Length: 358
Ligand SMILES: Cc1cc2nc3c(=O)[nH]c(=O)nc-3n(C[C@H](O)[C@H](O)[C@H](O)COP(=O)(O)OP(=O)(O)OC[C@H]3O[C@@H](n4cnc5c(N)ncnc54)[C@H](O)[C@@H]3O)c2cc1C
Image (cartoon, rainbow, N blue to C red; front, side, top):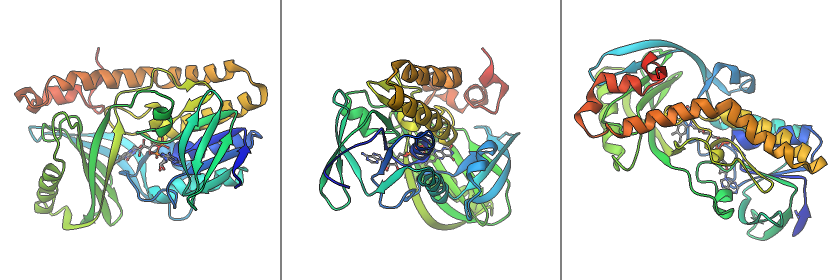
């Protein structure tokens, strides 16, 4: 790609946030370069693969949609459970991400895989990239979209704080009966997180999340949950694949725009601090940031960038603040007897009216 080059918009990371951003910016006429450090977009998958129904428009490509979901069953510490409507789709996340990237390419974005951002001078609007062949290149940009996930190397390079995260561990297991709900376990066994079983046709994603301040070992509690479901005859004993990853849980960054860098998705802290869901917010923020970056590249108007920050706060601020507040409430209970009280968990989970009470 040459040792030095200039683009309008540099997108770092091609998860759903980066691909949506690259597509929108290119469609708006910007010269877009989008880089992804993985060799193959979307792999390895680090996701439970549930998307809310409206995102189905991104799940039209062959092989992306795996099964519809009707409801959510939330299990409380006492064993009581509550069924709620929770329509959505289970997808093949790798194919989902690649479908988004394909659309970005079709819109005119240049997409490079196996390429990593290694350096950044935000004032000079210059990034250093390590290319797939091991050589380096320098890119100057008008706007940079940081769609580089929960640990955001761009944020680190720009001197911004790391986001607090919860750690997860997930097995894919055989599903022994057809299932159309997502199951959620709320318990002191998974402090700072929860357990989940998301069905995907003949298999299911079975995982847990936990806050390392309270629980360092995710394997033992996940193995116990797995053994319980095997005993119930719901899933098979074999582990077909394993994954995990970090989920930002601190809520939105204090600033989503720094110099001409726009943060989107996980890198922006838009992931829901209670549920850990972040695909929809990544796509939506990516689209918004892509539009704003293209306009800024054309006009140089700082107000366009400020408008992106404001739009995201209007759209996500209240929801994320409530979720972050509920997390803080729960932190007082983990590893104490009250964490095994159903009333505590009801206040801390989105399926219950108590969660939305003042
Ligand atoms: C186990 C697990 C289960 C989850 N389940 C769900 C779920 O069911 N539903 C849901 O909505 N959300 C779920 N999430 C959250 C969801 O996966 C994220 O919110 C979503 O991926 C955010 O998208 P993104 O584009 O912001 O970031 P990411 O998808 O993380 O993409 C960031 C990309 O940037 C790349 N990158 C990083 N650094 C560099 C660099 N220096 N140079 C170039 N590229 C770089 C990475 O390789 C990566 O591909 C889950 C998360 C985990 C860990």
